[in-house]
Every structure is written in C-alpha cells, then in structure tokens.
Image (cartoon, rainbow, N blue to C red):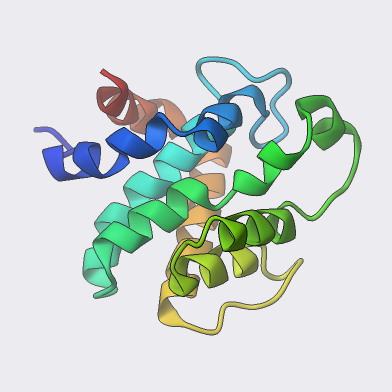
Length: 160
C-alpha cells in the first residue's frame, strides 16, 4: 500500500524546485549535526507536509493550503546561513512569516507559519494554524521515538 498518493506528489512537485525550499536541505533538523540526506530541515518539512496532508482531511481543513503551509513552515531558516542557525538563537517563525508575507502567500498560510512555534511564540488562533502547529510537534515525537525512518521511506517516494 502506498501511503504517499499522487495528489500529494503533485502538490509539492513545483514547490520542491523553489529556491527557498531547496535551501532547507542545508539546515539541520532537530539538532542533528550536520544535515544529511537522511535528516535535514527539508526532510522534516516533507514529513510535516505529509502529516498535514493526511490530517487536514480529519480536521476538515483545506488540504492544498495545509500541505503548502507545512512545507513552508520552517522557511525562516533559509534567511540565515546554516552555521548562523546552529550557533545563534533566532526567531525562524517570524523570519518565515516576513518572507511568506513578502511572497504574497495566502493569509491563512502566513498566520500558520507565524504561530507554529507556540509556546515559544504566539499561539495558534485558528484550527488551521493549530493543525500546522500540531503536525510540526507530531514530527518531533516521530523523531524522538525513532519512527522517522519509517516515514522517510514513504517521503522518499515524493522525491523520485
């Protein structure tokens, strides 16, 4: 059984070519140093997008926007070098918020990116923002429980 369906692949296909999305692969994820093919900020964002795709249907939220917001949720990392990100505390959610605002993303996506770091930032005020916050934290649990390999197997289907 394929967990990654063709509609998910189609949704992220063009986004994966984007300059800022591509830069995510050079940033560490979950404090793993250095970034690798197995774990980097792009892989994390793909897992979050995959989870958002599945759970947006349960939460009755716009699937297309959920996948987009999830894939872009950590885009603020791309505004600094990987070395700076590893060695400095900075607010990547606000940097991402500013970047997607400049790029004229829909307001629902902009707000979800701004609030995805709760409680270290503003709290989600909509169900959609809560969904993006939730799937980001769910991926942290997946990382901690060493289940990311299972999910990465399916996520890798999106890259082929």
